[in-house]
Image (cartoon, rainbow, N blue to C red; front, side, top):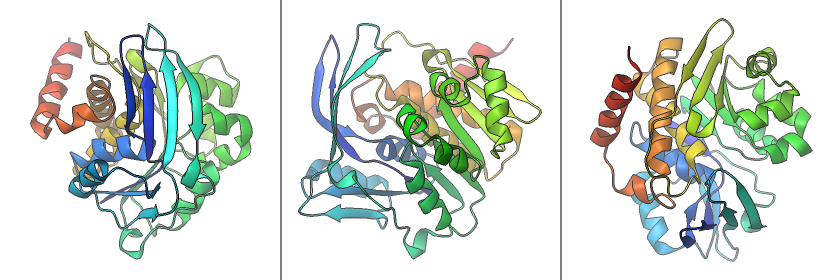
Length: 298
């Protein structure tokens, strides 16, 4: 069983080529969808009474919902952003936290024994609170963003010391550690207590670090990128999904999981919102995984 804790939102995403209004988004949405291809996944988050029925239908089909809180007289978290022509730089136009403001995740009793826990890029205080409610997960993973590094750095570091795997991108880890070298930056994070660190580098792939090993994984080559939203969260879902399916926690399995994470991120960016995930099956994921292996083998 996988439990994914994080934001559920309604996004408006603008690119130079198209604008997608009021589409399903949120860190927990992407990570849970990606993970659900591999193992039964439960989502923990909060939505308002305005959450569209068609999106709730997707949730009911894909996830366990005992950890979903619905505030009937509240509004769902909303995020509006614009990408530049390279689709690599994003500008935030507006953020309306709505019911997400002050949300305290409560883990239902049926989920407290979950073996695999993914904590999205939430307020680190929320993540620590959520993690305390699980009995003894085999693997816990956390993500973060620059907002929390800038405003709650000490709590971010505390959170990282409580999980098995920390995931963040190259800009975030440099901001957090003040190191220009990603290798030195990873060592710093490992020194705070995480057993492994994964550094996301966008289209350039990922780096997986443990205390005595490193594994670089290039990004899957794509001709067309439509919407980069959710790629990192989809990576996280693919990573923990494969780990849960394998029921192992050794470094070799983590290397496989990183590749599955890259594969899920590559699917996510091929369409707006979560649309691509609604069109693929596990066999499509496995085909792309094998294609990836063929590309990097020599």
